[in-house]
Image 1 (tube, helix red, strand yellow):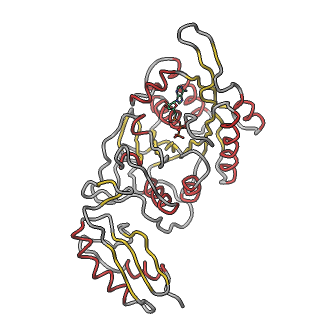
Image 2 (cartoon, protein in one colour):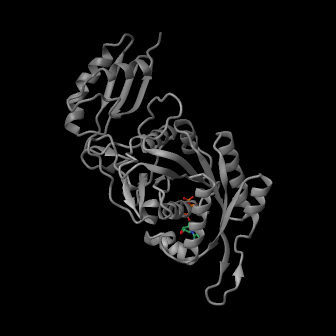
Image 3 (cartoon, protein in one colour):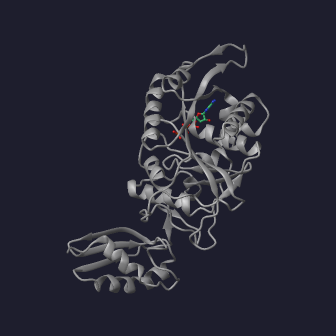
Length: 360
Ligand SMILES: Nc1ncnc2c1ncn2[C@@H]1O[C@H](COP(=O)(O)OP(=O)(O)OP(=O)(O)O)[C@@H](O)[C@H]1O
């Protein structure tokens, strides 16, 4: 029988590393390839001296397997790197490795409910709604977590005004931050601000798994709800979440524009296929009131999302106006929901509705 990846992983799991644990459990393996007896992999995510010291033992363990023609173990030069190249604090785990096997969807420890916030199209305000709703729910007395799963364009660190790199006391567990009363984690917190994520599907899946299960979500107390700010569209991240954990609900954000609505319908369809209960649709950037003359304009149309919700027999959760204050406060890291104006009241009403309906 041909040599398999599983056999190689099993052999590597048996090797105790100088720093304790094994390379599989500590997620130090990258790009494992097994082809016609030729085995190659990269060791990454621990101090280089430890990786170098581990290399001969790991090579020997794989060579001892029947059917192995050659083994190449690469230890990249330089300090440990993670998140597609970001320099890491000494013991922080690397993010974005290949996913580890998991038997079906699992609960996230310390979290009662998980609600995903998605959109079909980018730029419709999904992250803005996520951060403001998280704060509004926290103000209403809920214990709230916010996971920025928008891996290619993480905006929650900026919107929530949190930029400290999360720490990891044991090199495995990642401690989330806290901002505006919300427990927060984002891939963006582990990247340099202008660094691009260039990952294939499996790396994304590994990163999502880590974000769910390696982050100590109950660091500041158990959470009533974890909101997940999804990337736009219907791709690997959405699918991984559906496979790795149980989502208790989904909210779809759209602008009233036809192009956005078309994609929002696809997001609705995706959640239905993943068997995630749809809590409803939100129309963002619905109306614009001119601050000078009070004239009401509908820059992206108006009412389209409510009509679509009706057509799909889904709750319509509300229309949020296009408001300069919303953009400015989001850019400043102090979302409007933490203040007292009309926008804050809209979000408070949304939080109340979700609480009263038992969704949160
Ligand atoms: N109701 C609103 N009024 C004014 N500006 C808004 C409103 N909603 C969102 N914005 C602004 O629009 C921009 C895009 O919003 P946001 O990042 O929340 O969208 P997104 O759907 O999460 O985008 P992406 O798909 O790129 O992650 C931001 O600058 C944000 O401040």
